[in-house]
Length: 190
Image 1 (cartoon, helix red, strand yellow):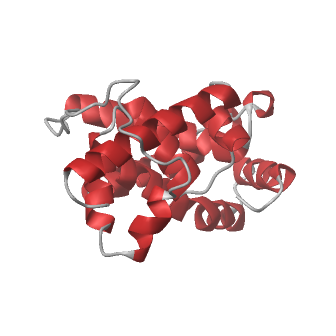
Image 2: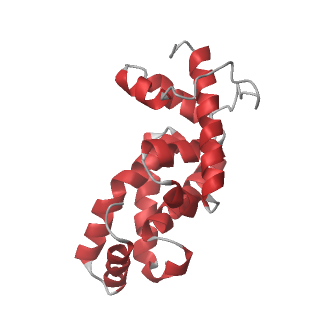
């Protein structure tokens, strides 16, 4: 997401005129992040590949459907991916159970200073984390994937998820609390 929004907008304009190089640039920039987003949200490689392809097909079919007043090109592309992923998961029998939610006040003295994702990335517990993220309710899973795994800012995530930055912060805090409890319960972290 390092390119300025105006550059992405220009790529879409050129794409609408039939420029293959504009499409290639847009694809090269966003294919990886969109694929990872869908993979983290669905936990399924086939779904991630299919939806990533569908996002770019949607852009090719209707390059003028993007409205700059509604957000960035990145937000637009992630929004398409999000909607396609939701439809796909609703239509498939692949549903991850959302068990073991933590009560709001049940933090068991978990230290706010502990950086859970950093600790896990330094160990061989990434599989534990991936599975735990998949058990989060969708609204919490989305903010973890966007803000922590894709390293988006709160404003960028807020545009994609169509909510306020405060809501992003609140959901992320709640998601981390749920993840900590889940991972501790599984013995993945101290």
